[in-house]
Length: 593
Ligand SMILES: *[C@@H]1O[C@H](CO)[C@@H](O)[C@H](O)[C@H]1NC(C)=O
Ligand SMILES: *[C@@H]1O[C@H](CO)[C@@H](O)[C@H](O)[C@H]1NC(C)=O
Ligand SMILES: *[C@@H]1O[C@H](CO)[C@@H](O)[C@H](O)[C@H]1NC(C)=O
Ligand SMILES: *[C@@H]1O[C@H](CO)[C@@H](O)[C@H](O)[C@H]1NC(C)=O
Ligand SMILES: *[C@@H]1O[C@H](CO)[C@@H](O)[C@H](O)[C@H]1NC(C)=O
Ligand SMILES: *[C@@H]1O[C@H](CO)[C@@H](O)[C@H](O)[C@H]1NC(C)=O
Ligand SMILES: *[C@@H]1O[C@H](CO)[C@@H](O)[C@H](O)[C@H]1NC(C)=O
Ligand SMILES: *[C@@H]1O[C@H](CO)[C@@H](O)[C@H](O)[C@H]1NC(C)=O
Image 1: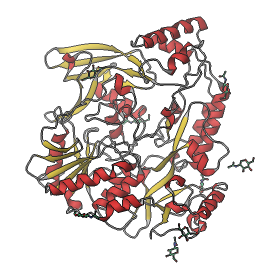
Image 2: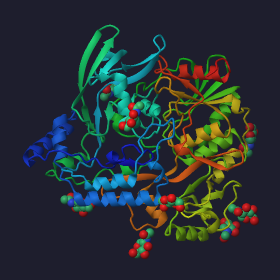
Image 3: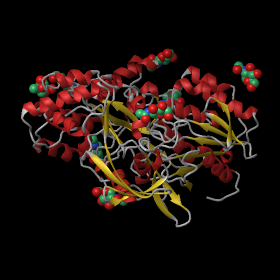
Image 4: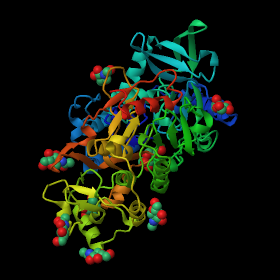
């Protein structure tokens, strides 16, 4: 099952379907292969690549399902996706991606000939090693290294010279450029191809080069290394193939039923909350470079998310790795503890943050800069003939119960720029043809407002710095961009490609919703994408604004590089406190960036 992300326009048709052009095999061969797969899974062994390939390819192509899927995807994208038109345009300078005419691409899928239909995933393909990238200061050249090779630890700290016959760096760049989605900035995608240096919530977003979820093109990858002790080494790694659900589960039923896919897949995979979901791959692979990072240069104050640097600068570090409303009280406590410890400066480490609740963003900004709300960017949504009656109905219902949240409910928004409640559905709809007027989200609850009441912190914007590895996504992007643009908080991006500017955030889009929620909100007759596929898309588009509160650029399409840049080396890739020390020097004006 695929979760379709439409934030990124890259290779949209590749991620819509995992339907490949393959040779149809005689059923008997396929059946044998499928039973081998099934038997390997039962024995908790890695599945043989060729067995899985034959088995997957034997699933017959369902043309009806394909047509219905393309119809539904096109319907949702053209009716609700705020970047539908923008996606066709060339990228602004700083971004690297291919423009996509979604309508044409989807229609071209209709004309393609497919022979098989392996429309489910759930398998993990693991090379059993960690790749990371460092910038060598001596030669000022970047190289990539194998680190913590979980199959053969004698490969730790070897430099990777070639991958599959290509220069290692180029191989990773090409993979990041052609295969990885999520960010429009190639530097961020480059980081995402490699092992994360800190524990993370959503593992499958990182380590994408050698820990995959899509069926790899080849059964193995060849590496050429130069090792500190062993010298030149060549090795070939087969994929270790395991199943997302550990071993067994639905896949056995699926594979054993005479090659007929039943598609009764784990539903929660499609509908679960992206921000909080932990994939079960954690159980079967060790995908983090540093599951238990050494923090040698800071003292932990609280449960792994709060530190004080021990460089004498009285700098506190708050690690924010997800945005959840239930963590707001904890966040407030963190700031209060730092105040108590006499912290003069604050580093917000927001690396590897997949986003979460949008109100958390408003809350964080409000607690640090208790300036007048709404502390958020203006947005708008697409409207059409059938959503207008829905907006009018919601307005009359006059409910602000969070249970009734709906993008077409004017009660959950305030007008831009004055932040006033809408007095009529007409004000909300505005005068434009297919977009609403500009809206602020207005969802801080009573509880959140209560938490904000009794706080006062000594820090100004000059005392705060944000550090990320570029993967600070969605709600995280909205916070960091807001703090940077509106409150002039400095930002640092870590990693990426040498000598490029780099984004500190990714897909600020506005608000992402699933097709079934959208259908429900809009009262759409097409209620979802058929079969096991799922589709999420951006339904609200966020904008930057100027001092006079005029709406400026679409944030998703604005390249916003960090003020400062740091690179990974052999040490700080294992100990983030070394990066915090650098950030502290910048904060305390000891170094310019
Ligand atoms: C093909 O897909 C359609 C639509 O989802 C479904 O009704 C039908 O049962 C499928 N056919 C087979 C052979 O699986
Ligand atoms: C990324 O891919 C696009 C499309 O294939 C290509 O035009 C571009 O040159 C590539 N960029 C880099 C830096 O490799
Ligand atoms: C993952 O790491 C843990 C602890 O470092 C180890 O016990 C376990 O065997 C590893 N798992 C795999 C699949 O390598
Ligand atoms: C909506 O409800 C609030 C109280 O919940 C009330 O004060 C307000 O007048 C109502 N507005 C309309 C338009 O009915
Ligand atoms: C709604 O009416 C109030 C009272 O007249 C006014 O202050 C406010 O600006 C109006 N809201 C909008 C969005 O115009
Ligand atoms: C919205 O309106 C603009 C201008 O009237 C038009 O160019 C655009 O195609 C419309 N978009 C949609 C999704 O209907
Ligand atoms: C407000 O904060 C002060 C100290 O920071 C505390 O003594 C007081 O109880 C707080 N009041 C409320 C209502 O939380
Ligand atoms: C749903 O179907 C009804 C009856 O065919 C039609 O009147 C209505 O416009 C449709 N609504 C949407 C949102 O397509």
